[in-house]
Amino acid sequence: MTGEFTFRDARQEDARDIAELFQISSDGVADYVWSTLQDEYPGLSLIEIGERRYARDGGKEIAFSFANCMVAESDGRVVGMLHAFPMPEPDPQDDGPGDPVLQPYAELELPGSLYISGIAMREGFRGRGGGSALLSTARETARALSLDRLSLLVFEQNAAALHLYLREGFEEIDRRAVVPHEFIHYTGDIVMMAAPAG
Image 1 (cartoon, rainbow, N blue to C red):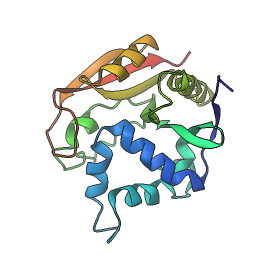
Image 2 (image 1 turned 90 degrees about the horizontal axis):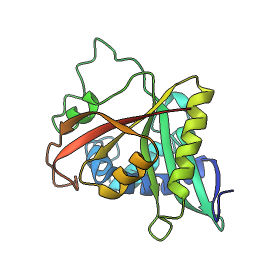
Image 3 (image 1 turned 45 degrees about the vertical axis):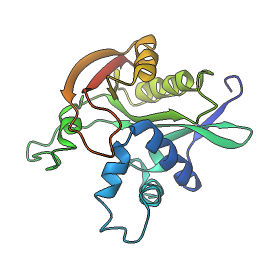
Image 4 (image 1 turned 120 degrees about the horizontal axis):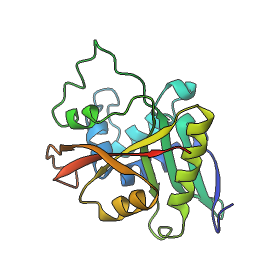
């Protein structure tokens, strides 16, 4: 326990909370991705599509699943989330997502790192150490998997997130320009950052 929070591995029934927190952490990117899946999930709202995806139970092999999430609770309520998985080596046959909006994100990958694809605390629970504690669990996970680095993407205009990551020892590795879209909250650059797992 860290202060008012307890931390645990996510469960399938946490899928809605995970989707809501991933929606917060992605600053519109998740909404864009989920919108591209509407043919697969007819009649569902974007958040319902996210919930369905995070409820998938195929173990850690399914990257976007509850199995790769840790949650923070306060008084029994899920108020924070970390989603992370090992970034594989690129497939030389893979030409990328084929989607110009998503292409910059696909180009910012650090193979062999534990990739933090989402980290968020609900409004009212931020600035209380929950984010730092979740990053500590990510470091523990990386070490357990014999990965020596963490990586993540952040919008350069998201000053609060950048401040947290710099304080936690992350450094800029690369960046790409955001492809503007109505769902995505920021313009400017997407910054790839990395930090030692130790």
